Length: 350
Image (cartoon, rainbow, N blue to C red; front, top):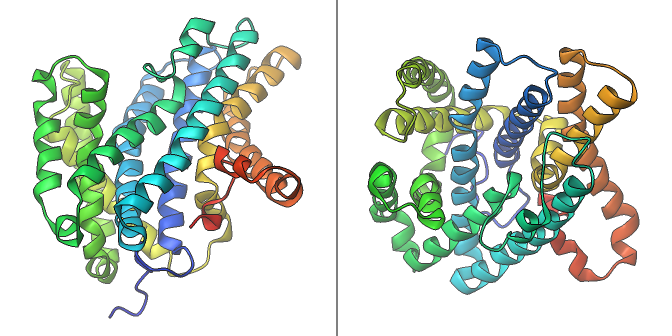
C-alpha cells in the first residue's frame, strides 16, 4: 500500500484531505469564473481575447470536475448507507438548499435589478421547479444525475461495472441528436463524468501511487487538448464531442492526482475551502456581486484588478465566515431542520 495513500470516499473515518483539495480547486474555479463574467457584464472588465480565453479554459472542465468528485463520494455513500439511505441523504442535501437559495437569491436580484447585471423577474424566479437559474442549475442537474445513478447502481458489482459510464459516454456523444429537453441535456452533458467518478473510486489506491506522473502527464495532455479545443471553437465547433470530453477527462485526472499530492501535507486554508464548498457555492454570487456594487456605485472604484481580487476573495471568504458563524452561534438556537439549508461544512456531514 502506498505510504501516502489518501483515504477513499468509502472510509468511515475523517473526511480525506484529497477530497477537500479537489473540492477546493473546483469551487475556486467556479467563483473565479462567475466573478470574471460579472465584471465583463458590468463593463468593468473589457472582454479581451485573454479574458475570453481564461473563461473558456475554466468552463471547459470545472463543472465536469464537480460531477466527477460527486460520483466518487456517491460511491462511498452507497457503500456505507445503501441505496435507500443514499437516496434520502443526498436529496435532503440538495433539494432544500436548491429551493431556499434559489428563492432568496432570485428575490434579492429582483429587488436590486437596477443595481446589478441581472434583469430578473418574479416569473423567472418562481419557475425554479422546471427551469433552474443562475448557479443553482448544478444542484438541479446533480439531483437528476443521482436519481439515474440510484436506478443503475443496485449493488457493489454495478459500482465496479463499466456499463453506467459507457451509457453516459453514449449519451454525451449522442447529445447533438437528442431531443431538445432540459432533463436530457443535463443527463447527456454530465452523467458520464459522475459515472466515471463512481467507477474510479475503486482505482484510488492505484491513482495515489502514481500521483506525480499522473499530475504531470495529465496537465501536459490537457494543455495540448486545450489548444486543440480552442482552435475548434474559433472554427465555430463549440458543441460536445470527443475533443471536449478528452480535455475534461484529462483535466479531471490531473486535478485528482494533484489533489492527492496536496493531501500528503496539511494545507489548512485549502481544506477549509473544500469543506465549505456548499456554502460557497450557494452564497458566492451574492457576496461577490454585492461587493462589486458597493465598490463601483458606492465608492466609484472601477479598477478591474481590484474588483477581480476582492470579488474572488469575497466569494470565498464571506460564505465561509457565514457558515462558521452559523455553526458557532446560530445552529444551537435554531431548529434542527435549518442544518439542511446548505450551511453545514462538509466535515459535519455523515
